[in-house]
Image 1 (cartoon, rainbow, N blue to C red):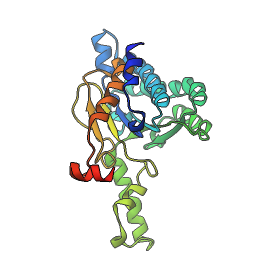
Image 2: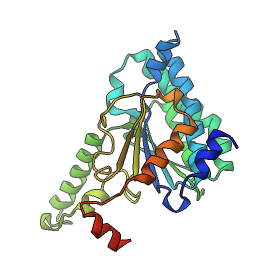
Image 3: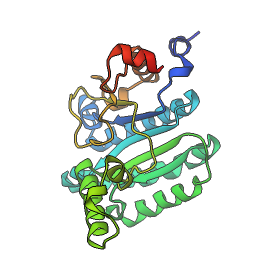
Image 4: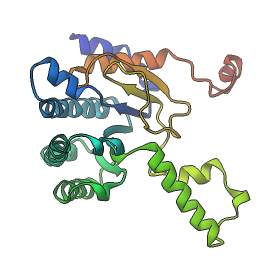
Length: 253
């Protein structure tokens, strides 16, 4: 039995998280540490995306949400942004046959209209080609930030109120959730961040109110299947109370 198989055997299949979100950090630092240019790190990171997507599907996780490109990333050097956009389009096209074979559905979250035409069309094609799939839902956050998303939601709600379609006193948490890009998607059970940083970086701020957080120093290209399962094992050791006491949780289970 391999190390990965041993770790997987320790997982409780009844407590696999429904939704895992990931902040894929460390591509550039990985490249620098190996004497490569930053774009080489992003290319290497595509292989990790392939692995975590397949493993998530194999383990029965229903939703995997990846922070692929933030609104703030548009401020990076143009050459790096152009390379990232090319890689995103190329990678989704390359992975499409296997995504279809594994019944993986692609959903795009973010200000997708800002994505360059070539990459955007490849993304749309992959999204439409996998729309019928019923297995893992792979949510790709592209040109996304939580503050952008919440601002857009507030704008939609304000228009509804201005048009007389919504009474402000009827606005609830559900009203806000229903107007986010993630409407209809359950909140993440687990958020994993690679790269050794301990911050959320404007990612799913509304949705992770009660998510469990897991930080690892592993740079994204180094994030192994074994460590992914280790994060899931760590998640299964935690008591999720959602503001209640331990005794209350026991009585509700």
